[in-house]
Image 1 (cartoon, one colour):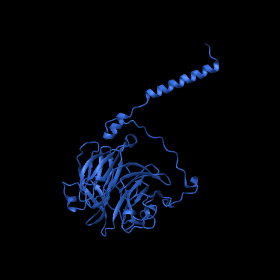
Image 2 (cartoon, helix red, strand yellow):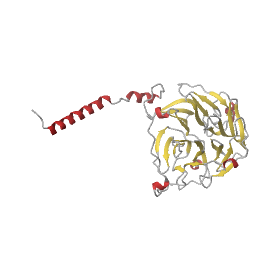
Image 3 (cartoon, one colour):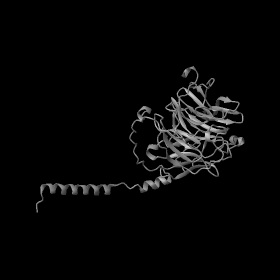
Image 4 (cartoon, one colour):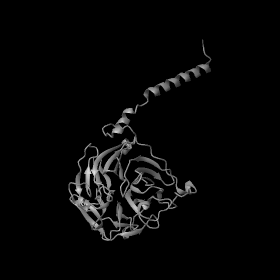
Length: 379
């Protein structure tokens, strides 16, 4: 039987579509094995995820029209995240700095946010947030685009520890047994290379443990996070509380650390033979974070509600001169952790909800971008 030419074309289309569907069904990838690998936290599998295409440009304030209103809207245009629980570490999520990752210390969540945009939880861990513990700090894997792994320093009911959070949500311990205390748990982590994670720990309320070589309290050490049982290599001892690492954004590899000890608050350069103090605050105003840019070093001081910014010393020098203070009481309140954004700007996260005497606003806690300035060099 011969078909009408129109009917023949329709029959051919149906057959072709059916064949296409069958081909797609038989070639659909099976991710069961990869999910199992992610749950195990292994780094041996070849990454299968491809880099995402760049996002379209974010509309300017003018292009967006009238800003939204409500209790979570801060009119300050430098603010890019609001209505957070008390914060821990903060990291840029794009090169412009307009999108941010931030840790909610007290909830154990890592939040992705941008100004006026929806907030999304990208990872979480169960934490003990009593005292100053909780989700203290985090770092994206150096190969995050491929493996979507996140490393975190957290407090549990028994210790402080380094964990790895898989994209499936599973949390795998990497290093356990870091001393925990009622206070002095705040520390910091930073990748020096894919096989070297730098860890800075608080003294857990015991200054003697910070000097004890058999304790991981009050130390800066490195581990290989890819190993199942990494051995810490100590780089510095004698740290106090609220320890914050601030690595250089440049190629010089300089690493600074801020902490608060019995002799006062201080900013130090981490050298091959330990700490080299470059500035100290004898009145202990409450250092709470730091960031290093191309020409500046900024230190947040929560209790005094200000940020002190120094001209960054030249290579081989430890002289940083007098700081230039920037009051934050009216704009942001108490500032905790900070990070640099491309070496020029910095990002800060507020801790008003956990700072006694702070003026908590309806949109606290927040993340904001600011431009550090120190002395005549940056005016």
